[in-house]
Amino acid sequence: MRYFYLALFLLVTLTLAQAQPTSIFLKPRDTTTYGWQSKKEVGLYFNQVSFTNWNAGGVNSISGRVIGQFEENYKAKKFFWNSRLQLRYGVNSQESQGLRKTEDVIELVSNFGYESHKNSNWFYSARFSFNTQFSNGFNYPDTRNPISRFMAPGYLFFGAGMEYGRHIDKLSFYGSPLTLKTTFVFDQDLANSGAFGVDPAIYDMSGNIVRPGKNIRQELGILLTNTYQHEVADNVSVNSRLSLYTDYINSFGNIDIDWELMVNMTVNSYIKATIGSHLRYDNDIKTEIEKNEVTNVETVIQGAKLQWKQLLGIGVVVDLDTFIAATLRS
Image 1 (cartoon, rainbow, N blue to C red):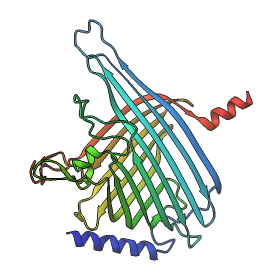
Image 2 (cartoon, rainbow, N blue to C red; image 1 turned 120 degrees about the vertical axis):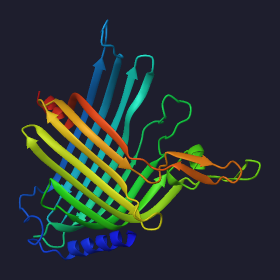
Image 3 (cartoon, helix red, strand yellow; image 1 turned 90 degrees about the vertical axis):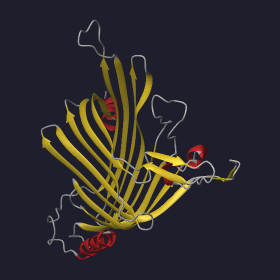
Image 4 (cartoon, one colour; image 1 turned 180 degrees about the vertical axis):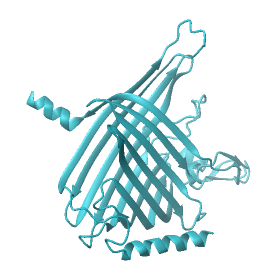
């Protein structure tokens, strides 16, 4: 089965490289806006529930989420360069439970593409992405032992391949047969435990560390991504981002999945509502591991599981460029 996936991917890659502009998908459109385009948005989403003598019962809660999205995109006749930085942080407080984190994202994506034929929707592409988090993560209610920290983990992807969508801004397919994935775990306690797939520490018979856990894990594999944007109704848009990755050497055929689907509804220039779903699966993140205290050999009790996050919020989102321009005019 693993060799079947590899053969299928190579066949698709060769098809992309040799495809003529009118042979697959859509004919290219000559409506591209060239030059620099930027987008800078910040927003605050807020939810609150309070109960007083409510016979159905309930728990008082308050939650907030701060977002920032910054884009710099450049297009020319032969190449383009798109970069996007996303920052998100959310907290929730329920009665008698205190403050808990609900979202924590630092993500940078940069994509450079070169088009060898001006009438083609296919082009060569190199892509870089990096993501980590701001603060410690916990398996609540335990708040003494962090299960993640800033740069523990951190993920970096860098590769080159082919992409479809040069003249179609709302649709893009990207395939890279050579993508380097680097996992950073810059917390020694987590590294010693072998968190996020790094090599764990080795101990002697007395429990002393002979070799500390490694802080970096590198893989080389296949990356497939798809992005899609569509306005399904007036002021209602759907955004989908899908990423599939498998390593050649370590468990080839075990595919890491990252799929984010967002429905954005615009009430007016500032008020927006969002419904979101985020699915993740990473074979390196085991649910439960038992470690022999003498030999330090790990036994997986429960393997990786599908991770799912749902989101519903309404808040204020400000386009900084528009806001600054309006402020200067006034």
